[in-house]
Image (cartoon, rainbow, N blue to C red; front, side, top):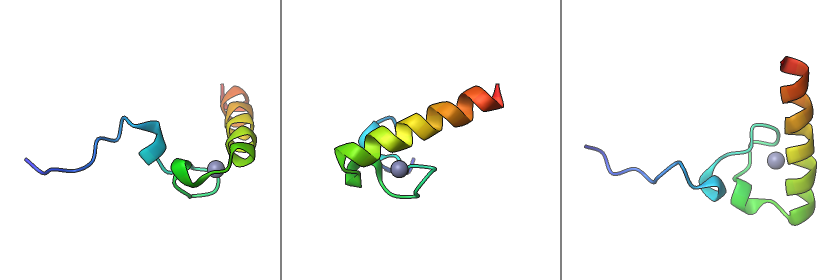
Length: 45
Ligand SMILES: [Zn+2]
């Protein structure tokens, strides 16, 4: 087995909107990105 970091930690995930680690986001960026993500999702469905 490979020992890779657990991807279930949200802070280790890469934001699909800005391609940065979510842990690198400022609180404002987090808000903007999560808003955009929700918009994308609701449009997609
Ligand atoms: Zn982002």
